Amino acid sequence: ASRAPSHLAPTTRPNACSASMSLATSLNPRAPSRVHPTGSVEGPRLGSITFPNRQLYLCRSRVLSPLRRPNWSVPRARLAVRSAAGVGPDGSGSEVVTEVASDSFLELRTEASLAMESPDAPPMKGSVDPGTLAGGYETLEDMLRTRLPHEEFADAMRVMQGSNMGAAVRTLDVPAEVTAAADVGDFDLKAYQFLGAREQMRHDRVTRLGLVQNKIVLPTDAPVEDQREALWKRCCEMIDAAGAAGVNVLCLQEAWTMPFGFCTREKYPWVEFAEPAEDGPTTRLMQRKARQWNMVIVSPILERDERHGGTVWNTAVVVSNNGRYLGKHRKNHIPRVGDFNESTYYMEGNTGHPVFETAFGKIAINICYGRHHPLNWQAFGLNGAEIVFNPSATVGGLSEPMWSVEGRNAAIANNYYVASINRVGTEHFPNKFTSGDGGEAHNDFGHFYGSSYVAGPDASRTPSLSRSRDGLMVCDVNLGLCRQVKDKWGFQMTARYDMYAEFFRKFTDMNYEPQVIRDPSLGDSEEDFNF
Image (cartoon, rainbow, N blue to C red; front, side):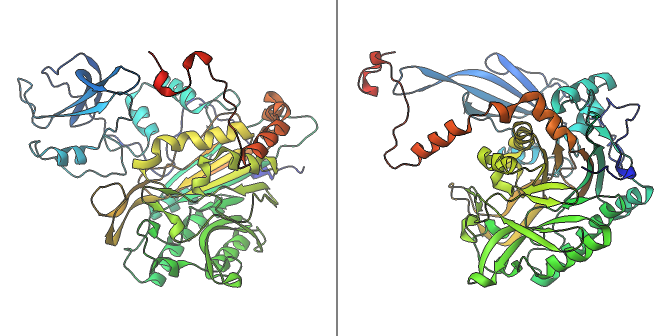
C-alpha cells in the first residue's frame, strides 16, 4: 500500500465533538416557539408532537377492533390535531381526529396535507416546502443544533451518528474557491473526514470521496436533449467544485441525466434518455472530466445496449481517473412497489457483484433498491469492496425512515464504507398516473429528499446533505479502518458461509420444507388454537 498524498492526510480539529455546519450556508436562524393549545382530548394522552402551527396529541380511545382468532381486541389510537393558527385566549381551535390501529405504522402528515384533510381548519399561513422539515430546517441535524444546547447536541449526535476514533466524524477544510463556488452555484456543501488508527506496518490510505445530489433543471415536458444538456451543465458545476476540492472518487445519483419518469409507466419520452454505457455522450463527457481532475467517476445512467437488441438497463458506468472506460454494473434488484414500477423499462441486471480496483481503492455500486437486500451488500464485501456507493432515487413517503439505517447497517455488517446518494426535489409529469392502491391519479412521485451521507465500518456516519437543495459532500475515508474493524469484530472469521450455502441450496429446491419445530400441544390446525 502506498502513502496517500500529503493534501489528503487526516487532521484532528480542536472541536471535534461538535457536528459541523454547512460550509456554504449559515445556520437557519428560525427557531419556532412551541404551541401549547389548551382543551381536553378523550382518553389519556400518550404524548404530543409539536410543529410550528400545530400540535399533535396521541391518545387512547376505547374503540375495539375484534379479530377472529385469537379472541382479543386491539385498542386503537386517536390522533387529535389542533390548529394553532386559530387558537384563541381560551385555547379554542379546530380539531381533526382520526383513528389508527395502535400496531400499525402511524403516518404523521405534513401541515399542508392535514389542512387539506380538514375543510374546517383555518387556512395555513405561507407556503409549505415538502423538502424542509417543520420549522424550515433543511436537515435533522440543523433542527437539533438550533434547538439543543451545545453539549446536549454533541451527545445526541454521538448516540445518533456514532463515534469515529473517539469523537463525532470530524469536519474537513476545503479550499476557499470551493466554498465560493457553492455560494455562487447555490448548492449545499459539506465536508468531513473519517480517521483510522496509525499502524506500524501499513501506511495510511486515505481516499477523498465526492457525492453529488441534484434536482432536475428543466420541466419534464421540455425537449429530451435540452433536459439532458441542462443536467450536464448543472452537475458539471458540482463535479468541477469536487475536482477543485481534491476529490479522488465521485459518484452521481441514480439516472442523473434525466427525470425519474419510471413512475409514469409511459415508454416515451423516457426511454429516449437511454444511451450506450461504453461510448455514449454522457460517458464521453465524464471521461473528459475524469482526465481533467484525475478523478474516478461513477455515472449512473439509463443504458441502451445496442449490441443486444437495444435492451434498456439501469446501469452505473465507472470511468477511471485516466479517462478510460473501466466497466459497468447493472442494477440487481428492480422494485415493484408503489409508483416504482421500473420493470416496465428494464429488468434485473446480469453483471453480478463486480468490484472495480482503482488507483484510489476498491469500489462497488449497489444501485438504489439493492440496498433493501442484505445479501446484495454482502456479495460486494466478499468480493473485496472497500467503498460501496448507493446511488438512489427515493421519496419521503416511502422510504425516509429506512434511509439512514440501511446504508449504515451495511457498512457495519460488511466492514466497508457506504456512500448513499439520493436525488432532490419534486418532479411533475405531464400526464397523471396511479399507484395501484385505490388512490387518486397524480402528476408526481412525491418529494425526493436528498439527505446523502457517508457511513463508516465503525458504525459512525456523517451528517446529511440538504433534504431540498442540490449538494456536494466531500469526505475523506481512511481505508485502513476497514481492516481494523474486521480484526476487532471478526465478522468474516465467525461467519458460517458453508452452513448458509447449504441452507440456500435446500431453500432453492422446489421440494424445500421449512425447518419449523411445532409444539405438539398446538394440535393439528390453527382452528385448534385455544387462547
